[in-house]
Length: 119
Image (cartoon, rainbow, N blue to C red; front, side):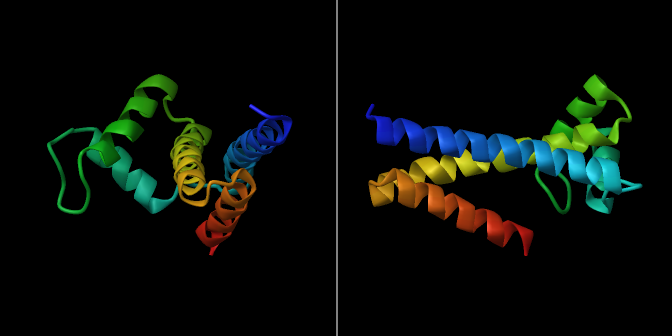
């Protein structure tokens, strides 16, 4: 691995770590209540079925799993959502690197994808 590639990888990992921390802390400190979709997922998680009329079963399983581990801590559900965002960024980075064959373009693509998540 060349120094250039290692540096781009380090920038990417710093980017996703910063994204995880910031977007877990900011909503945890500023929101007084969880989003309604999260509350709905928690309600569905209390009686796990093979699916629901709006979502597959994993959308209720993961919030229920976090509820069993962390209880009624709002920050845990913001962390859970950011874990899924970070995993998505990782796969977008890897897939775009396969397409572009260029780490810097893959990093730029992830940053642009992040911008569109916020809109």
